[in-house]
Length: 608
Image 1 (cartoon, rainbow, N blue to C red):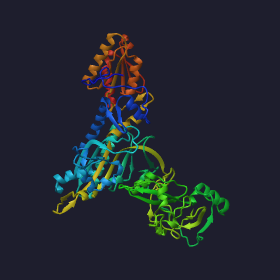
Image 2: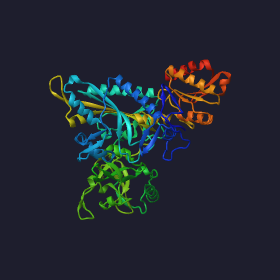
Image 3: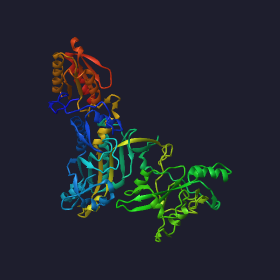
Image 4: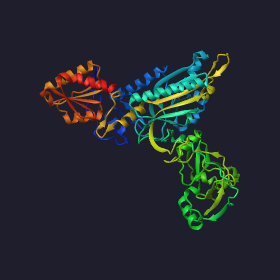
């Protein structure tokens, strides 16, 4: 409702603070954190997925950064700072110039040199250590930075949760031996728990895929939230994993010596699993039970788009009662990106009959055939769900319109080029470790830790002399925290229908002081309280706007901005009292002489 930029000591004043509060949600905002951060004047949209930070937003951001920085220093981390604009060559050496595909911001300088806006800095950290260190005596080492990153998101959404420009803390550990990497990894894991506890964020640690980062062990820290983009699972026995990392328990193989021979049957007008099951039960009933979708083998045709644009057709076979999960496929086949096959893709492979595709024409069973252009078309790669084990019997396509094959036995009648975790994970599925049925939930990824191993060190020549004077490739760990995403997750978890409700440790101020009334004595008393609180180290936002701004507007702004405590100097002053109310809680009355002590005590209690 007002604008300016004055900050006097630890007292911000609404009459001069650079802020505009809004009563309506921004049109492009979909989630609560995005709506409220814009309405409360913490951020402003500059472009899709790109935001400007205003004074209140920067104060919250600085407090989150301070907590992250303190915990990194506590485990021996040393802070550095790299440029965001980087040359192509280091990323080309590790293969990530191509692997990142369209997600990388690439640009050229005036001389035609290739550069990128860094999405992450593994290469630069490795090269810096290579440049300065050469002996095992220099290690272990942990370096970190808090810096802006860039990713060309195809669909930026949810404000700060998935942006194209964002702030991360990324740290890297350097050790000579794998045992040292284990220690460094555990230190970071413990530090992350402390960070999220201090931020007041609920979190779940889940096993995860490494993706384009590479490496072995990988875990994510997720903040449970209905608007989160990550689906994860957990079991009563303590198993927890990102859905992309869930490994399907593989059934035992089944003997098939007495299995009937496969036979092709007419099944007209059955291009879907539902229509196929209905016809199978009507025309080919089983003596023991009805056919179900789980008896069918569904073959889904996908195109893998490689980072260089190359397209490869692949068919995934899975039980017909399951759907394909593209995110699981993407995690398994990274850096390729899967998408549904197009009509043009199908034209290149005439052996594929839509709705009636079977494994007889795929993978090891497939043969090179003559395509529409007269050229030889190679066999199509065929990958199977782990549940399709040897001896299982299936109804599946016969590669002819209106025909399916019954009693097609895996291992006898067909094999595949490999297995893939491609099927959706469902609530009630067994946990891989036998710890009970899985339940599904959604979360916002707050942090990700990786044991990178020697991938980047080998690619970039990062070696040191070991205790025997021999060259040893350094082993690395990579550890990220989304700082701006943490702010959004905190806003998502701490709000109500009236506005934000920040935890005291990261709120822009601890006290929002509101002066209401027409007499000068109200503003004089409020000014004195603000000054005395600031002298006690309490951060205050004083709404000193003149009487033309109504009490209703001031109270709405206080609720929207979300300070933990609201102090009201108004009509009660005539009786010698001031009102103190938690952002969400019951108001109390205190004598004017006691209010500074009472508020200071409450602030200290909130800060722990």
